Length: 142
Image (cartoon, rainbow, N blue to C red; front, side, top):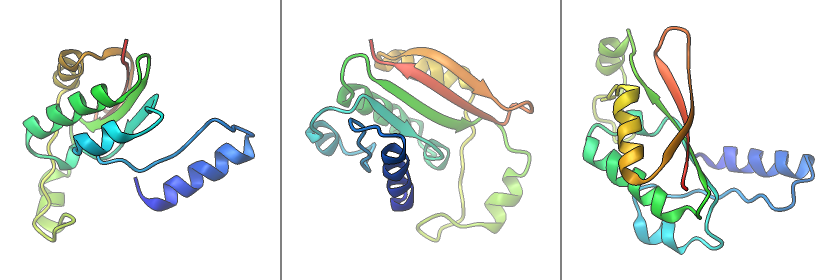
């Protein structure tokens, strides 16, 4: 999450008078940093992140780490792309954060939900766009 979104989240929480809301940037791949968060988070958001991670094992590890880091009853909201008709064009034209050719990985919602379940999450809700390109999943740690 970019710094501007953290600032905007804090501003919006203040505007709404929410005093017990905290926004922090986390590294979904750094176990030590996630487990050091105090108090433990009750919500984690991964938006636009997993599409850029090509290795399934890295995504699975991240989901497990987030489950471990969240307090019991915590929520995990994540997005992923199921399809993208412009993927070959995007991969040919754009570069990633390391200036290498862009690589994105589309994943079926059933696969992602399977990973969430294996990590211990219960999928609560899923929203998808009308074309079936994007999905947003809300999962809970029992």
